[in-house]
Length: 284
Image (cartoon, rainbow, N blue to C red; front, side, top):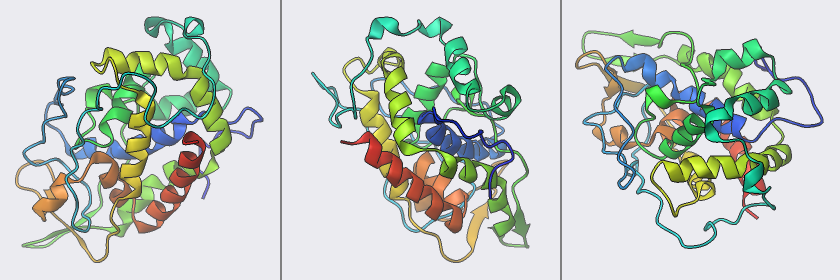
């Protein structure tokens, strides 16, 4: 089911990061539930502090702790070698002037209005890095997300003592899953390398001076690939404004794993297939 704003066919192909952005866009559904003031990015020297109960949109099987430790300091190359040669870092635009060249590259793949529906283009390189870094954490900070909220309202059924997520909610993510499936993994990896020095500079500026964004990308993908499958009703609770999982163990799922649950089992299977293909190109 192709998305309404799917990028036109192109020999250049779409950049790899649109896969992660499409996935992160799905995470934007969290913010439809979180009407409280967004919390700031966690201090760079520690992992993000767990929320007392993170907002969610779906439940899952018993989960492992979601909060990933900050990238360990490394003295040389990434733990996961990059899949090719990098351009000279001196050819990268400075971060404060990088929005225009990034947008220009993206406009080769999709219309400006289509991009505006999905992406927060201001300070895009930093937003992208923050989004990727927080996928293995418990929550992506809304004020620094690279993507906009998923449209539509959460579909739930309420009784006197139960709130259940409805399958109709999964349709909200049709366009994003279709976009992910349309992207060519080889081309994504090639364009990833083209802009990697800029993204790595932003990652280290976040407070990880000896870490590598590439390792965090692989960690985020692997985390999503291990998302548990859901069977049976997805039960929620709404103690105040925000919906939360009934099972407290499910509150510890990472943002990336919650994405894979929130989109529904059929979409999750398609997403995992695309993620495995991307990972194969990014790890050589």
